[in-house]
Amino acid sequence: MSVSEQALEKTELRTRKRNPDISRERILAAATEEFATMGFGDARVDEIARRAGINKRMLYHYFGNKDELFQAVLESIYETICKSGQSLDLDSFGPRQGLTNLVDFVWNYYLDNPQSITLLNTENLHNARHLRFSEKTRTVHPPFESMIAKLLERGVAAGDFRPGVSAVALYITIVGMVYYYLSNNATLSVFFGRDLRAPDALKHWHRHVHETVERLVLAAP
Amino acid sequence: MSVSEQALEKTELRTRKRNPDISRERILAAATEEFATMGFGDARVDEIARRAGINKRMLYHYFGNKDELFQAVLESIYETICKSGQSLDLDSFGPRQGLTNLVDFVWNYYLDNPQSITLLNTENLHNARHLRFSEKTRTVHPPFESMIAKLLERGVAAGDFRPGVSAVALYITIVGMVYYYLSNNATLSVFFGRDLRAPDALKHWHRHVHETVERLVLAAP
DNA sequence: TGCGTAAGTAACTAGTTGGTGACTTAAAGC
DNA sequence: GCTTTAAGTCACCAACTAGTTACTTACGCA
Image (cartoon, protein in one colour):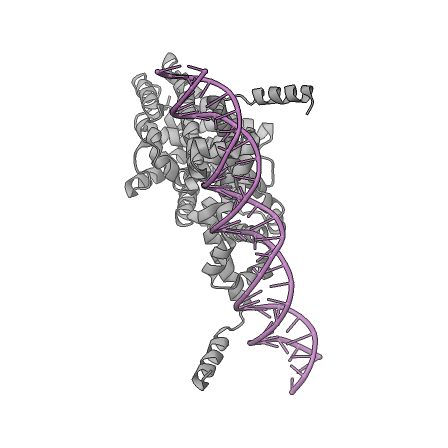
């Protein structure tokens, strides 16, 4: 080995710096991508390591095994959903505007985070066995229920909303319409023989969700 | 080998009768079950053969490979959905009763056929690549669109329904609310910390879908 | 400054898994 | 009856894949 080669090797070794936080983050990002596009069984641990640019052994070092890695991915998605929910400030608006903002928020969230949809579907296929036994998830609940309950109370008090709609029912109605349209877009497009992901179709459905939710909640004038 | 043993073997051989139709059916049923519970990647071809009670070699003889077998499963599900849709006779009822029947039909179908949900989810994960290239699916369309369009026309003409709701929008609204609630029941139950599959919760959601759809479609009195 | 621990690497393996080659046997058609 | 074809069996494999063993190297800390 020549002197210059020795120097080169030293440089290469120096670039192999330690950085546990970043490594962990890179693995999680790569795993999210892989699990989201392939599902659990088709996801390849080697592919995750390759995408993350780390040695596979580190993946086991940080996360234990494939199952625990998937659980970590789900927990991070759960955290993302909770956090972005908290940034939704419904209290600063009137009830009607708050309802509009809520629908827009859900629509934009799932449109911008298609990974959340496929990951949640995969987890539901396995009866939520990763989330059910997750400490984080069982203890920390999403802020949606109380937030929406408050919005509904204010709306009813102001005479804008009719009484009798629960926060959970409203939430599942909104998310259901948004989520199903996006999640099952491929098969629905085949069924109806048209492209339901075309910009016009998307815009149309977004409007339709607004209309349906308003008719559900708003008091008769 | 004794004479009786020879006779026994002959009997056993005779029971190994040929029955291509039944074999094909058994494989398809076992595959439906396996793919529905495990997804595509986690589904095991050996397990499908075991469940069907046939030799694995026959599975390849009839269906080619794992992908084509999955496609056959999806086509049969598609056929089931189309057929059960045809049995829905909306024309024999008034528009309001027809709408009620439509909601009940969708609700009961997905409640009784949870396999349809997980199989469709798996197919959507792969961007409907099996259904998109399926001759059957591309040529034969489900009867829902025209059926519902006729129902809506009758309702508007009778003054029961308001105009401006499309058949596709109404269909996706109903199925979306039913499908999402059932498909994501596990994670939703964890999120909200309650059992959304309890009989009361199911009954409550069924009622809620009726109410939401009626408020969407019915003309103001 | 040197030592213990945690980050990182390379090579490997035990068990699995989709898929086959070579064969036997039942039954439809002539 | 005899032949051809398709249904069915059995043993096998090459490729893959989650997980490991055995090792080296960087870094925080006493």
